[in-house]
Image 1 (spheres, rainbow, N blue to C red):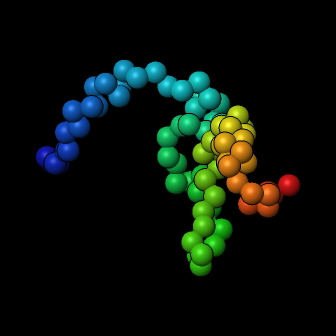
Image 2: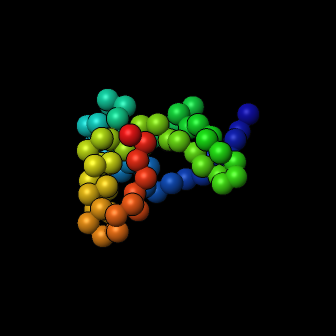
Image 3: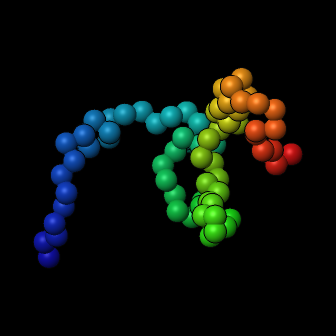
Length: 78
């Protein structure tokens, strides 16, 4: 049977693109996997994406925000 396929002109380039080094290790930067998403709350809507960012990427974002925000703005799980 025939099926309709959407052509993506970027697909050949994407197939040749090298994978990110930490994507293979499962530390973030990889592809979206719905099995790694946990719904934390419906109201407000909140989801946990495990492996979304590496520890280094998280630290970098925290550093960027902490330089610009007043004390007590960041929430920490620790």
